Length: 225
Length: 301
Image (cartoon, each protein chain N blue to C red):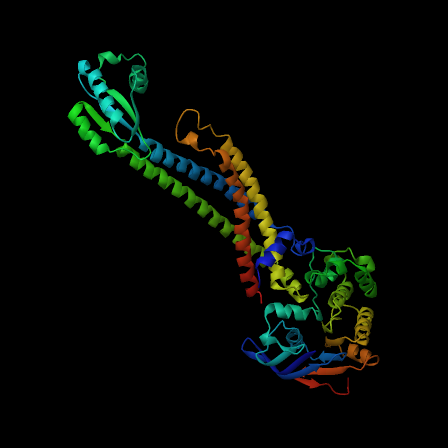
């Protein structure tokens, strides 16, 4: 699915990530942890082609991102659902249109207005909020809507960057259950978080690999987690 | 980013869903419509100027080139004889289609603006005028002058070239200026639309980021902006063209009291040329927004 090989990334003259190797196999579940500012978000961006590595190779579905045109990367992103902590929507469009935006931009309008959308909105518990505008949503609703948007194309991989960062414990558990459910459906899931309790709660339900960024490098986290 | 023929077709066909991804409001919308309307209004006048000066150049160049005047400057008792002699020469002169002496009434009408309608031509040494119309291929003016000098000593041939040539040159230059104005108007509109498109693209950087995140290609994003600006330019230019066309139509008719300004109107099928203005405005907006979108999307990588 997604493979990083000896990847380094420099920014502003300093190296943020160094010699990172990571392979996200189909159906696997990963956590990426580490203190704020260690490069978790950067690593996620490398995983969906939003950034190019300064050294090493990033392969998305067996294709090196360096050899991809911008439109090729756009096509790849249709197979990778992304949930950001500070999720962005198109504020002038109702939630249903925002959630179905990936279908709209890929020319699948009919599906965007179809039964799949209703089912998906019900799955994330937002059926009653379909016509709401994004600024009217709470933090938890935004995160669930972002997850719905990320999976509406039935992507192979879901990348989530601090998906529970702005929401309460109960809502974060609900979101986590949705991500575990996606993994059980065969999706590859990578969650970047500094919330260790979230990781502990998940390990009871799914076999997850926990990775930590420390000193610019990626390590397998210890049994303390 | 591919903005080829298929994308042009897709843009014309439209995509109601894609149209919605770009926020509808903003000063750029009003700026584009206003600029297109104003430029189209000016373009109508530039076009009218070009067409009128073209007509003028053609008239001065072709119609007046086929006419000449012969003045018979002779004592009163010889004037009629010399006029007859000149007409006889002209009857047989190759390239002369027709020739006739102006009547007293016609000459009086010509002089009336200076001397008033009560002028008695008999009391003044006014030369008799002969109007000469040539065949389309023209006549040998130099040869005719020599012949008249030999047979009609009081005859002076004026083939109008002395004053006609600078007028034709001026009319041609005016037509050129008209077309140059049209080009400048198109360039100005392209610049305004480019500025408006740049502002809209910059203001919507977050929209572009969201669209990219969910897998939109640059072509899709560009089309959404291009279609919006092209349609705005088309609407604005249509409005400006209609108002400008009405203003030209309301100008005094070319058939009334002669004069260059009254001849600014557009005649016959040439009214259809106005339809090109909105289409050209849309094409300019299409190109300008496309270039702005390509540049901005590259910068926002």
